[in-house]
Amino acid sequence: MKTKTLFLLLWLLPQALLAQVNAVVVHQTNGAQAMFFLADQPVITYSNNNLVITTTAKQMSVPVADIANVTLEEYSVPTKIDGVTIADGGILFRQLSAGSEVRVCTIDGKVVCTSRADDGGNVSLDLSAMPRGVLIISAPGSTIKVNNK
Image 1 (cartoon, rainbow, N blue to C red):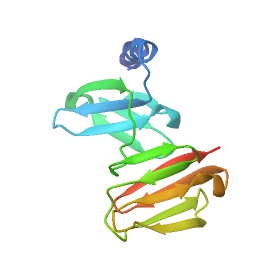
Image 2: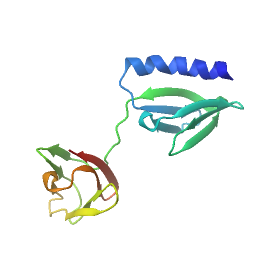
Image 3: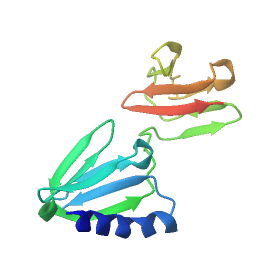
Image 4: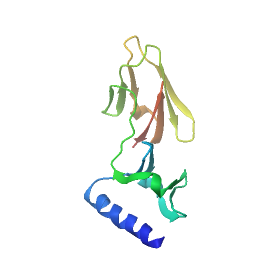
């Protein structure tokens, strides 16, 4: 058991050193994938022929026979909002539906700004007028996190 865990760690370590990675991805033989961000400090163990990955947010246990591959990858969360531009202390959202609501909240859930897309589907947010720290910005079908320094 310890030998297989050690082998897995020795196999993953060079990948982490050679590339900028931020996630462990388990690729299963049925095509399913599970991603664990390294920032969540995943703990990888082997128990009863299962690979077990645990973070404070989630846990996964999958039979080793069902694993096609385990990789370390650079992963960025897609915003699902086409045409997002962040520059000069502001964010411009384009290509939203006219009248769509964009809401900005602090990390504790307090709404600090609500805007609606104009007839062209644009919303411009001035981050300099908003609280410093992590802001959660949500638009229809998408949520992004911004560190407003």
